[in-house]
Image (tube, rainbow, N blue to C red; front, side, top):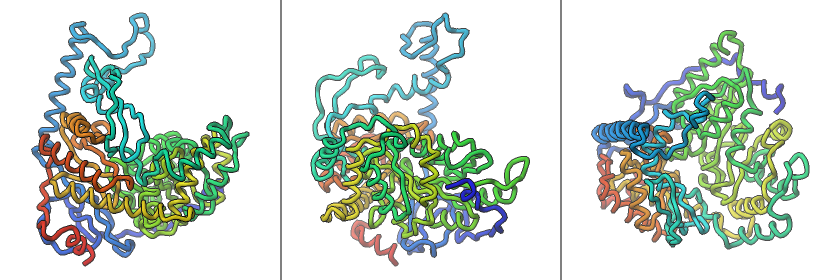
Length: 564
C-alpha cells in the first residue's frame, strides 16, 4: 500500500441517512437483537442490546446476541461491595503509613523523594487493596500441555497473596475451561506435534535474525503462501508475536492527518497501535452501527479539526470475536458502511479465525462475505492453531508496503521454525489438505460444544453474554467477593476457569470467562457444568430473570422458532 494508493479514499461522497427497522429505547439500546422476527412464546426481561441499523438482507441466517441487564439489587450490592473495600483500603493505607501494618508495596527511598516518582501511589490503590485479595486466582503455574485437561502446580501464600511458594504438590487432570485452545491443536502428540519435531531437527529452534536480514527461511514463505490461500487474499505476512502484529503495523498504515474509528471494546494491542500511529482516534459504541455511521458522516462533513481539510485516510478497526463479551462483530453492516463512505477496514480475527465459519476461516467465512471486502485482515496463530505469532493478509501491494515499513518486520526476530510448522500442519488439517477429516471434525465438534455449553448455562439460570455461536462464554459474577470465591471453588472441583473483574471490565460486570474447545468431550463439559451449577447455588450466582422455555420443548423446538 503506497501513500498514493492509500489516499484514493473517501472524501466528497454523498452521505446517505439510513433508517432503522427498530426504535431504540431511551438508553440507546434495542431490546430485541434478533434480525429475524420470531413468535414470542414467553416473556423476556429487558436486555441490554446494541441499537443498530437492522438490515436483514445483509444476513444469510439469524444473528442474535443477548446481554441481559444487571438486576438493580445486584448492581446496588456490587457498588456497596466496592465501596466497603475502598473504605477498608484507605484504612489499611493509613495503618501502613504509620507502620502499624507492614507495607509490602514498592516505595520510593527517602533519598529519592525529590526525584520524579517511579510509583504512583494512588494509581496502585486498586492493586494493593482489592486485587491482592484475590490474586491467587491468577498466575497459577501449569506443568503440562494446556489441552482439554492440564496439571497445575499448587501454590500457597503466607502473607495474604503478596508472595507465593510452591508446595511441591501437582493438581492432576484439571479440566481446562480457560485456554484459547478452540480446535484442540494445543497438544504434544499427533501429526502436528510430529511435524514440529521434524522442523526442530531440521532448522533448530531459533533463527537469530530478522526477516529482512538472515532470518527469512523457506518455511516462512511456505507459511505465508498457505495463509493467503486459507484467507482467500492475494498475499499475507507472518509475525512472531500476535500483540506486536497490531501494535507495530497500525502505525505503519496510518499517521497524522488520518482518522481511526475504533470499537470501544477493542483489544489493548489495537488501542496501543492506534495511539502509536499519531492519528486522530474516535471511539464508537460497541457493535453499534448507528454510532459508527454518525462518526463517519461527521468525519466526511467536517474533515480535520481546525483546518477542515479532508482526512487522508479513515480506518475502521474492529474485532471478529470480542474476547470479554463473547460477541461477534456485525461485519455485513460494517462492510456496507465502509463501502458507502469509502473508508478502510481493519479486521482483527485473533479469536474468530479457526473458531467461526463452516470452513474455519473466521468471521468473513461465518457471514459468507468476500474477503476482498476487508482491506486489512489480521489474526493470530496463538489460539485455534495452538502456536504463536500473527498475520496480516490483503492485497499484494499492502503486504509489500508492510515488508518495508512495519517495525515488526524490520526489527523483530523471525518466527521460530517449529512454530511455523505447527501452524502449517494445523492449517492444512483445517483445510482438509492433510488427507483426513480431522479438521472438519474439530470444527463441527467446537460448534456442537459451544451450543451445548451455552444452552445448559442459560437453563441453569446464569446470565450469559454474547453470541450463541461464540466459543467465548462470559458468565456474570458481578460482586467483587464472588470473583475470587468462584475461581477457588471451581478449582476445588478440579475445574480451571478464568475470572475477570474491574478494571478489565466495567465495575459492576465482573465475570467468569469460559473458553469452549473441540478437545472437550461431552463428559468433560457435563462435569464442568455440574460443578458450575453447584458453585452457582453456593454463591447465589443465578441472577437471570429470563423465563425459560418449557423443558418438553427442548433445544430443537427453540431452534425451530428461529428458523420460522
